[in-house]
Amino acid sequence: MTMNNDDLDALLEPIGQIGEVSGTFVKWDNVGDQVTGTIVSFDLEGGTDFNNNIVPQLVLATNDGNVIINGSQAKLRKKMTEGAPRLKPGHLCRVQFVSTYPAKKGEGKEFAILASSAPVLIDVDDTDF
Image (cartoon, rainbow, N blue to C red; front, top):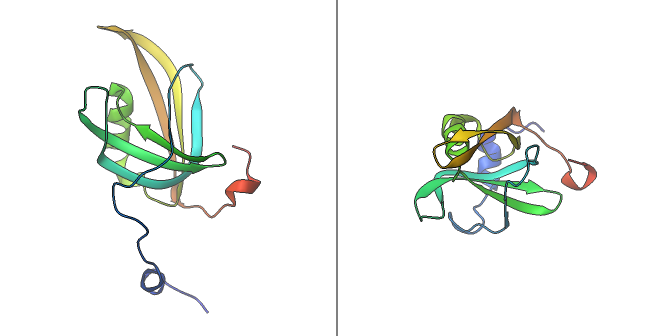
């Protein structure tokens, strides 16, 4: 039997409420740090920075559990905002801290975000990210 999206939607029910996020927050210490996983959720206004300003939030399912990425760094926030149409639940995604650059208040961080063009079905436990 072949099912289309409407058939699948009829079988799916929400779990929890929007805004309920659990997981470990990412800290970008070293150039080359990266997180790869399946997108659980993405919300342009789901996170906050250290000054309690609203920023984008991306949650990825990884082998070690959910990882929460708040777009509190300027370049990361810009990439997340630009990439919003492709940051959809079920898609594979990698966020990587790629370099630093001189900024007004010290050093800024540059990021790369890669996402699959369609949902990817993988068994996270059998994958070494």
